[in-house]
Every structure is written in C-alpha cells, then in structure tokens.
Amino acid sequence: MLPNLPIFFDAFQRVLEIHVKTKTKDIVFHDFTKSVYEKLFDVFHNIAEKGEDIKKGLPAEDVQAMKNETYELVEHVKELVDGMKDKYSTGMDDLVRGLVNDLEALCGTARGFTVENEEKEEAMEGAEHEETPYVADKED
Image 1 (cartoon, rainbow, N blue to C red):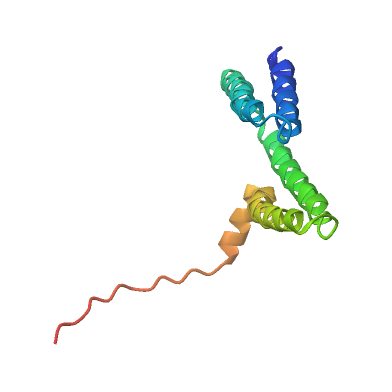
Image 2: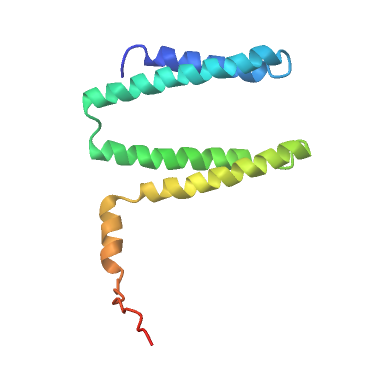
C-alpha cells in the first residue's frame, strides 16, 4: 500500500461525516462538502488503483478471497439495514426498504463472484447445450 493512502481515506471518511452532520445546520456548507468528499474519494481511489497497476496485482487466491469478502460485507450490511425496518418514521422505512432492495441486487451479483472459476467451468460442462439449427423462412 502506498504510504499516504490511509491518510487520504481518513480525510475522505471525516469529510463525509462532516457532510452528514451539517445537513440540517448549514445547507450551503453541506452542499460544498459533497464535492470535497467526492474529490477526496477520487484521490484515494485513483492513486490506490495506480499503485496496484504498478505492483501488477494480486495472486489469484487473494482475488478470490476478496470476492468472497465483498459478498460477505454486502450481505452483512444488507442484514443490518433490513433490521432498521419499522424502528423509525415512515420516511425512514421507505428509505430502508429501497436500500435493502438495492443491496439484495448487489448481493446476488457479488454471490456470483464467490464461485471459483473451476466450479463455473464444471457447471457449464455439465449443462447440455443444444444448438437450434437455423431454418430460413420459406416464401410462399
């Protein structure tokens, strides 16, 4: 990891917290902090990815572990958000239900990445694929 990445991420996280906390206190500053945390995330994200480009990436087993971890994290957050239903106002419930739906979609996609490539290939080999021959339409 590049040396300043934790500092970049901490700055992004802190400004995001400031952004959330100032919503009802100072809307002009709140709006400004959105562009700040977005830029700080861009700084962290772009420099981190460039660092990975330079290192030439991870061994395949590390990538698979990260795929599995991503699924587990999204699933865990979905469960926590889902547990917030019926505990706050109707507006919060509507927000929570929408977020749970979005997270469920992400969980489905993330779960697809948790299957090892070998298992995917074996599943494909086991499936029968019949090709339908092309038949041109006859003219009367």
